[in-house]
Length: 351
Image (cartoon, rainbow, N blue to C red; front, side, top):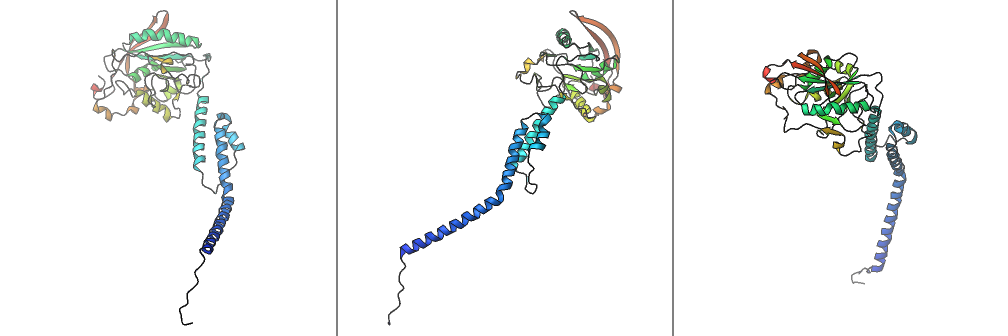
């Protein structure tokens, strides 16, 4: 017994079996924990998923019933859980689509709407664009007569040699109107509507007949020129156009901001009927030729000191040169020739 004690070596097969047993035991424990967690958290996930799917279904319905269906069909979300990203994205899309549909419903002007009880003045700022004028007058007579409207075309001709002032000419045109004209359309002479869906019927709110989505040339988002239709009383309420813009551009953006400031924003022409026509050339015809009559786009540095809001319908100054009833072919129009007075200092900003 004096020798050293030598422990018996373990059987390798026994060690492998023990390790396998321990591995299986740990795996079963983890599976039980996973199933327990799944039972605890599965209910909120199902609720959020169901809500998102319900919102997607409702977003494709009509705007007039969207809100009611949401309240009736969508189960309330668990307010204790944070809103999922899927739900937030779906809700954003739903609101954007509902806003678009509601806007279309609000600005819907019925095709061939009767002009009974209303009188339209078509006011056209003008200087030396005779080629465009000779095409404009017959075309607009045919277009407006087909809609059964009571209208008169007024061409406001700038006689002086100062820079062209579109805003001042439009103000002068409204000042020269008979009070019986209860709404106006401020119309460029080089833009002709080609589709019968483009209605000039009475509208109680400002309507942009030639929005950037339809104009054949100007597609930037804030474009608000070309053709604008609105009640005469509303034009007077915002004090018309600023007459500070001598030369081309900016007066239309200023006018849109004036309408926005009184809660009557300029709204685009109804697109439901004509929005499918991808080619803008099929909606309007633009006649202006930059090669023969270049735009006067210059601005003197001194203009930065001008406050355009200080100018408008009430202080637009001009001298009435003549008022004549004329015809293009057999189609009548009224030509009002004026000489504008410069309202800026230094005077070279007008010349």
